[in-house]
Length: 472
Length: 69
Image (cartoon, rainbow over all chains, first blue to last red; front, top):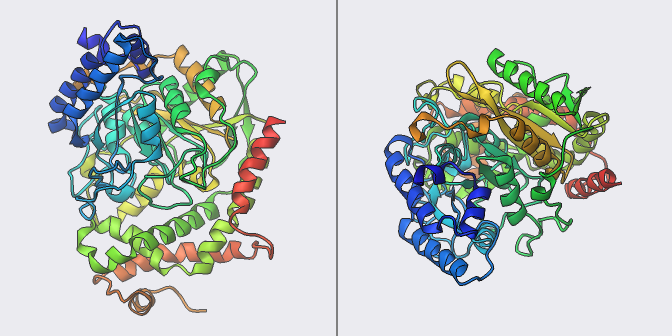
């Protein structure tokens, strides 16, 4: 029975708990067992809150037994990147500097998940202060890729990708400022949804860059991502920057077909410098969409070079503003590369920073007018490569590191600058057994269409039900 | 025009931020900054008199409304 429980997705698990086929306590005990077994191998957790999760599971089971209504994620164990604040609890942000930081409030998205009945199993490993797409961490140890533990899991939401891929938890929140949901999703073979900027409240989310930070789910299936998104998205008075636009439910959109949907394949940038096995698998995914009735068309996209550079300029200026005190007083408490990647924001002129933000509007209008002229959404590789070996990237201060970081995040960074929604979906494995993924990019607030396409793809394929050997 | 050099970055750090950069880092930081500065300079002339960063939020909504229509 427990084996079966562990391989369900969050939606099926919630349904079976609500129907009393299985109990939340059974599900949670299995998740805890796997978390403990795999921790020495994957190092996915920074903290595990087993007893509190079991107490919450018992409460859900009691409510169901008493015939009380429960939420759409009732009794389902989740865990989150250790940067979502919880009142009275430590949130490390993957850092030495915040290792004892106790939050005085709880993140809105965690309150919403709790309201839907989801359980909190613990805080997940992450890149220090959410800086870096590899997923390594000098303070808490490197998180490892469940498909091959010699490889990186992707970052910065490293534990989120690894714990979902290893079937420990049924979903996890990550955060994305330049690819930190989509990159670990792609490297670890799970689904990742980066919502439109302003769609999800950032209240209680550790900031890296307030203009680009975006919370979102990493999950086993697209419909799980849809369900979690539907719970966490929407206006929050505690985050005045969150959008008041009414929410289009993704869970409902998953019931539709892709017939007649126009999918744009960019003719420049996204398919350049892509490793051959990745390119092949993404081409195969395109064929699946075509067979499902979608129309694939070529899409022209504007030049990305300037966008990428001014995005980095603005991000670093915001990060450096937040970190300036510690950069001066406690520089030795940062990992070397993390410190430098934040520090160079100290040397950007204020005018340069404001130009980058002021021009964002124009870049967005140009991009949407051109890229979506003949299509509803874009399809690209999420990453041009698969997960690199940890030994190849554990080079801290080497000169190759900045180039590798830029290559890994090549296809995700511009979308963060533009604030557009994007969904990463696994689409197969290389001969070496490493996952590959495609990225669907939508117009502003078009998450539902992305989820609809991703879900239909998963209905026609079985990449998402494959599990790493260590989890089988 | 001057260039962004390690010495320049070290001086900014010391004057603006009262920060002494670890030895060797100033050159790396200068190399990171130079292409961003060049890109920023290229696009800066596109900034119009009436433009401001919050236009971006309005555009997100406007583009979504157009899609709805």
